Image 1 (cartoon, rainbow, N blue to C red):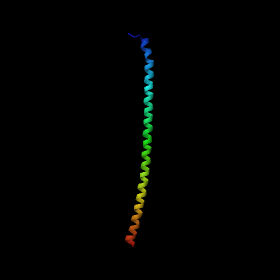
Image 2 (cartoon, one colour; image 1 turned 45 degrees about the vertical axis):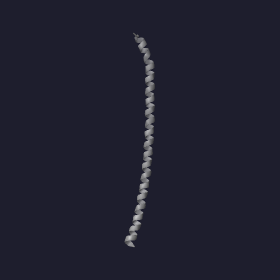
Image 3 (tube, rainbow, N blue to C red; image 1 turned 120 degrees about the vertical axis):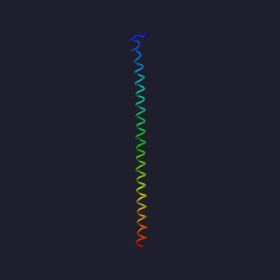
Image 4 (tube, rainbow, N blue to C red; image 1 turned 90 degrees about the horizontal axis):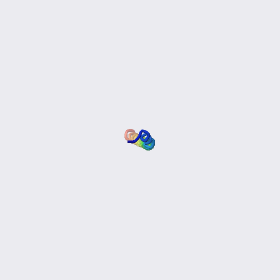
Length: 75
């Protein structure tokens, strides 16, 4: 049977391994968070670019419609 002193002596190494494991998990969480943030920023850039293209397309179609409408109705 191990003495109390022997049992307490094993806490140090166990604690160190647990703390190292916690630190590794925290690094993984931070890395994942950073990757998600980067992905979110990329999605936002894509949305802005798509919105710009859609606005340009709508503007071009409106101009063409106005041009043809004027020609058809006003000769």
